[in-house]
Image (cartoon, rainbow over the protein chains, first blue to last red):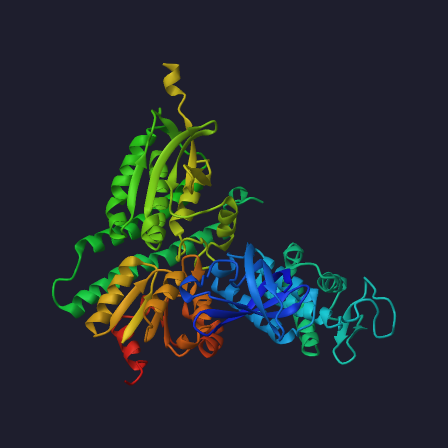
Length: 228
Length: 237
Length: 126
């Protein structure tokens, strides 16, 4: 039987019989995988190691006949240990894992693996604020779902103007010119373009005035996320 | 910007205060619950040594924190020749009883002869004590084989290094992140389940003395250390 | 009832252990999440008293691991923590529902009597 190699992030673990564990993994090549880790007794079940949460690992597995593979070996590539030093970052990490676990089907989707890995990178960096990570995550789900809002032309089909102010029409999902005082300016639109272009939270955290930009733009992204 | 290059501004002061306030919960809770247990048990379970060491830890944390702020507020700090080895011996002596409560062994390593260093004597002792109390508390939560801390000094091309080693594995990157988590997260250091305020107080004191607290390595152990400059005064005689 | 006390401070853990044992329980005291998994494996606890802030990990990570084992899924967990109530409130509902936490205690303001009373009130009827 062929041994396959990939990188993986653990989405969840359950026990299986007396000595085995079932791991639900997210991988770039094989999407969501379920593998049995045989003979991993509880005493050896480590909260630190190649198969713990908030880690990226190299795994070798044998594809089974059904939808369950067998894990042969793991090697830790990176453990995002800073996440567990802060309760709120831990909770956010679990929320994001849970969201992705619900969303991902058993199809290869490298984008979701990268999304979760970049999320861990951001959570592991204390200077990246949690609201930015949450909003960014929702935006990436929107992007991966193919529902990026129109950030280039307005409701009249005109190119967005750097001197104009806009409101956002949630029904039509487009910016509407509002010269007398719209909520969104060129800075907001630039920020949205940065987010939807896939820039990481670690990069976005460097943007000046990030707090105010996030406050203004988050509702737009959250609403977009509900359409996903 | 590296952790040690950040300015000690108002935000840093607030974070340090938050850290110290969080940390004070620990000895106060230990004493309160211990007293309550003695009441519940009704028969002589009160341990005066526990009350003494915990209150000493709390009071020293407050005093060293205040000292750090006061020294930082001074434009220039008068430095004097200080014997590193005597300071280490004093520090170990003060911390011994506290370490015993946590089943942590303290070892001294003052190999070699060292002339005096130019330092602020009170500040240096306060920094080493702050570090020590914090690391003892963290070491107490480790498995028995890892409950030894070494208070050591050694010479390097950069100066005389004095510090604590042994409680945990730590890299400079871990310290950078810990500084960023200080006052914002309940456990900025991997090895500690608390705010590890003593280490941040030591950092403030080091800064006041115009030196840096760094993550260092000694005999394959990691720890925290301060770099001091040898006194040139005796060479003039 | 056998109670697993997960408390990083040796002295505080010792105090809780003595109080619980005076109340008629047996206890195991551990200072870390990994030790807790090991201890629970050696002797199944009837209840866990858990500090959220743990060296190298935290109580949430521990609970996710703990609950992934079928025979530990119903063990009641009392959170007894330094994490302040206003921060606890942010994720209390989610954690209680998903991770089976039956009680939230703020450690500095919780007397031994209150801890014992909480343990009593969540002790399964034998």
